[in-house]
Amino acid sequence: MNYATDLPRPFFVLAPMDDVTDTVFRQTVAGLAAPDLFFTEFVNVDGLMSVGRDNLLKKLRFAKSETNLVAQLWGLKPENFRAIAEQIADGTLARELGLPDGCNFAGLDLNMGCPAKSEVQNGACAALIRPENRELAGQIIDATREGLHGRLPLSVKTRLGFSEVDMSWFEFLLGHNLDMLTVHGRTRKEMSKVPAHWDLIGAVAKMRNLLAPQTLIVGNGDVESREQGEALAKQYKLDGIMIGRGIFHNPFAFANPLREDNPLAWENCGEAARISLYRRQIELFASTWQHGERNIKTLNKFCKVYINGFDGAKELREKLMQAPSSEELLQLLQ
Ligand SMILES: Cc1cc2nc3c(=O)[nH]c(=O)nc-3n(C[C@H](O)[C@H](O)[C@H](O)COP(=O)(O)O)c2cc1C
Image (cartoon, rainbow, N blue to C red; front, side):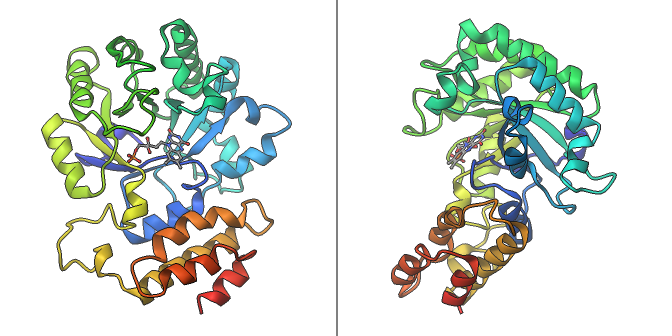
């Protein structure tokens, strides 16, 4: 995929979310109201190049129908980024996942924004924003690009800074000829505790115009609907909008147009429709993860999404969240 020519403006992206945006949930969202681009959960390249590989591959699993999926990587060793980028670009990794010839990821993204302590204290993810780690960040980008060898687009997803807003970070990234740059409008220190600073995402887009007109800028943070995203893209002159947690409040967040009488408006979905959507996701979960690769409890996040907003939802939800298997979940929903 060529992001610059193949995507509409603004384009919409479902955010990578660990333990959420696996192939099952992505296919579910695609069946409701699809964004233009999806991301995998973040996957550790150092783990993929170790004996732990088999256990991590599930995070990269995808279906043949998923033709617009970006693989998101994180890690520390540039040589491992190079090796995994090579395996992704030449299709080896997709074949290992059981995909037929011709099926591959649409691009590769580098996570330089995850704020979690476990990653940051090793110097990975958001820690790469710190000036003392900039050399490593550059080596990771360069090594990944070498592995890709022009066969797939390369992007970075990051935050506005580590402890403070740091525009020198964007000057640095925009000097690396990225195809796309996603800016989550908060610093690492701010975690998700304050509203996203969209004016600063707009400032990055302005900087892009001067330094790297070829790099598409995607804004991210607190967007709940396509309408809101379109307005923000227009106001701050952005190419794309990424929605994460908004999908939990409205599984049709990417629907267009959102009108009050729209059948795709979540508020218009009653008990039967919500239960039926959850059933569909559980059925796909059961047929995809047949060997217990995913803990059944990962479905509980979605239980809160669907089993909500109707009489008796709370009581039903309490029972569902204790269910030990997909069979039992489906039985309770009958
Ligand atoms: C449960 C969860 C898991 C996440 N996992 C990832 C991840 O694997 N990679 C990543 O780049 N960001 C991850 N994020 C951050 C989101 O992609 C997004 O940047 C953040 O939630 C802000 O967007 P939002 O306000 O639309 O949710 C995660 C967020 C949540 C809530």
